[in-house]
Amino acid sequence: MKKILIVAKETFFRQIKSWGFIFMVLGPFIIVGINIIIGLATAKSAHQKNDTDNRIAVVCKDNLLKTNLKANPDVKLYDNQATASKLFEKGKIKGYLYLTIKKNQQLDATVYLQPTDSSNIHKRSSVIISGLQNNINFATAKLSNEQKKKIMTVPEVHVKQAEKSKEIKNDTGIKIICFYAVCFILYFILLIYNGVTTQEIATEKGTKIMEVVFSSMPGGDYFIGKIMGLIGEVLLHIGIYLVGGYSIWRLLPYFKEGKTLVHQFDPFVGAILGNIGVYSLIYVVAALIICLILAALCGALASKPENAGKTAQFMTILIILCFILATQFNNNVHSNLLFVLSYVPFISSFMMPIRIIYEVASTWEILISISITVGFLIGILILIRRIYPRLILQTDDSVFKALKKAMMK
Image 1 (spheres, helix red, strand yellow):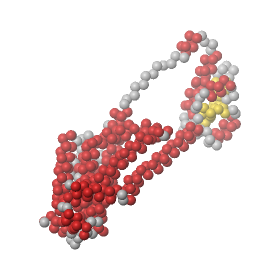
Image 2: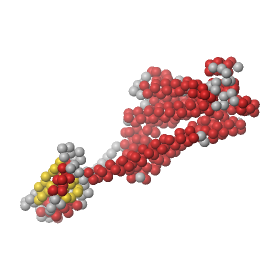
Image 3: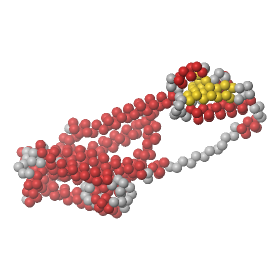
Image 4: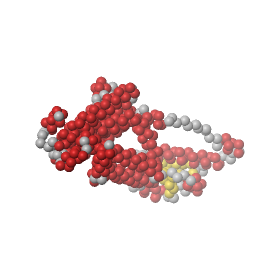
């Protein structure tokens, strides 16, 4: 066991110290960081622009009106109509309101609008005009204190808002997002580590150092150590993404624009994580381990390191086919073919999460499928562990001949 752990440790550290792994891990964070910075800057700019453009320009000379309007942050006062008219003609303001008071204390208002009232100047102006006229009426009516209290009575409003998260969780749109999130993540990680594992194993093909290693420890144990090291690399990779993503999400509220973003999307993120569930993650991990084992077999079947890409094509094609099949069942989750494929090892890692997300699979069906997948994983691990030493030392046979020879011995 000690030698297995030494091999696992050496494989793990060699992989994570490579520039390929570093760029592979940091790349998404750099891209996400740039997008967040651009998004926050754009949102801030748009927010500032909207604050200026959406204010209602008001032209009035009456001091009483000016006093009332200065307290309104939605209003920008102008002393003369000529200035407002020029800005209006140049499109600098969306519209403006010209106010005067008649002798009978009636408010005379004229609203100037652009052809398209995108900022709802008309509706907003009506609210301002009504409020000003009420203030004028209140000031000139000479009401008693009791009458003033009656007029100032406001309605009592009770707001009962449904819980947003419960409504979102069962939303079809959220289920579609969860489905594609699981499929794309699984698809890209499998493709990446299929190539990494195949190349890692193929580089040792037929070398003298392997003969020395196998003379000091069983070849099967060496294979287990390699797989453990590669699994550690994958788990570290995923762990960095999870911790990094969680940290970024928690840091966003410390920024003004980020706080709004988190408040808006936090229920959706919670709903997505809730829909994905633990069972889907089990399938993802199982698919990764199966992929690593089969990719190691592909690497061992390569006649030389340069041919690693060719032998990796088997797993590449299988992964692509699984992904394409999964996307076809998005709108047909009750398909009999989907039901059957959700029990086929490795393929089930793409298919069963669809049924889990759309809640069409019972707990017993999920457990049976997981049991079949785990049984298959253990079976291929035992088989490839047995034939790995024979394959890794062969360099002169074709893929099928090498596999046949290893199986016959």
